Image (cartoon, rainbow, N blue to C red):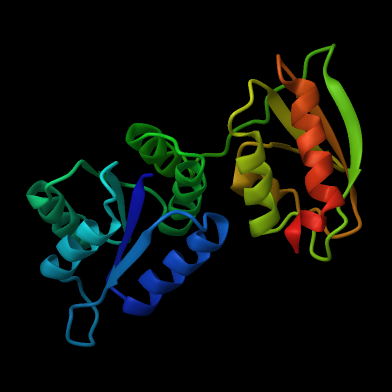
Length: 218
């Protein structure tokens, strides 16, 4: 499984982003590396290298960073690493979340890196075809499609051949994007429309219904 390293000038910021992403992807190793190593703001080349080593299970590591000088340090550490390491220029929080969810689905190094780098882009939800499978689903958990339930939906659909759209009010979201699902603002108790098309459309809808029936494991 691909590991992640979060590099920030602030130790607290790196740890917070790693904690948040880890809530979405509990099986992924996410290692924070923040601060200058002496309690101040900055980055530490040695610490970043050690973080990469801890995050690498043999499949590779994606490194995300916050500011320009952190990229320089991350690039240097990546060049010295023994395994495969990609340093990705992406929004730190959004990129870490997207990459973690993709890694949880056992995607490869390039796919996880691509998920991170595209996290800041606003993607249009795919249009459902005329023969799409549709159903209304009640969000049975207390807080609706917030971060963790959205991640569960994305992970449930990862292996399926289906385009899935979730609609709430006049908004629609690609169900394979954690950030897009969160952007719907669908609260607990809301009814959302799930539309799926493709070879696994019926299974995709069934999996979303099943998650709702389990209150998204909350």
